[in-house]
Length: 406
View 1: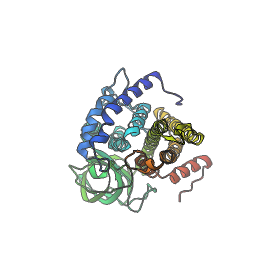
View 2: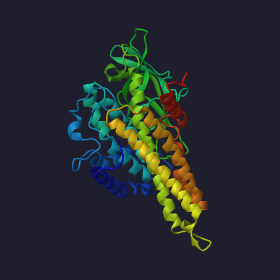
View 3: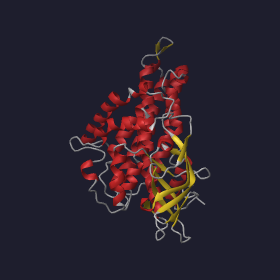
View 4: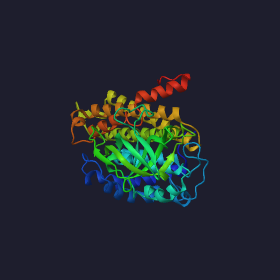
């Protein structure tokens, strides 16, 4: 169970922090913070990040590329024994989100197909797509939510019917992270092999091979993080692009999708922690400079109380998130732990950034200061990957053994 960083993890954290300050922070001035990243933007930035993420120094890397192609696994669980260090992944997510959460969210989502491909038994798919995803040649997304079905992950209408050597896909997915810039999509849909017995499955859709339409969906925070609607109209997807799901094991495709939420929710929690930490850092610096009534703002007791609460809540969320990731790292299910981390951390970030706005006063409402952006960014994260309310229902089911889902 995660309690504190090891020496190697601390060394990795130092490496990531130095990289973030030298390479990521300057991007906040180089890019328009109100416009979504393009695929070319993400690819360019990701190329700089590859040496830190994928090429190990002193034996430490999130994914060891020396082992990745020959990785063997049971196919069970989320990672199945694959060479992915979830704690290092969490460290990188937190540090990058502290400076640019939109960028971190976009890259995290882009890598999502890699994890799905890794735990599949489709060796041909691994050979063709794994490295392009890991190296940013293909910008990825995961398409689950539909216009009429959000929190109800199993309630979808997108269909794929087998016609000879291809699936014919029809349906619409909405509020898909990276959707409008995606080049590779993990699509959850209802598959029918012509037997009239549909089952839930995941298909890998290469936009170059199987063109689908998309449009951008603007949102209140994380302005640089692209989101979009995907439209599939008679889209032909090669039959061999099925990742999971079968008529013999009808629940397998949905099971794989729900398991993937465990790591995405844990990572979303650490995105929130990164934003909250940035708000704390900015607030501490501000109260040590700003003067009121003849003394520094930081000398007022109520200001110190707010900072104390902010720091405590952020640390609690951090521990919950790393606890969930440590369970995943150990090959254990983390549904309840990830739900707890996600619901607490995302709501915590809203509270912390709100207090940061209050500490800054009128400056906290100004676009000249980053605090108002942090507040909007934090507010965004309580909904994706399952709302706060859904996480609480998952926890309630784990505690009582009774499901509130109809």
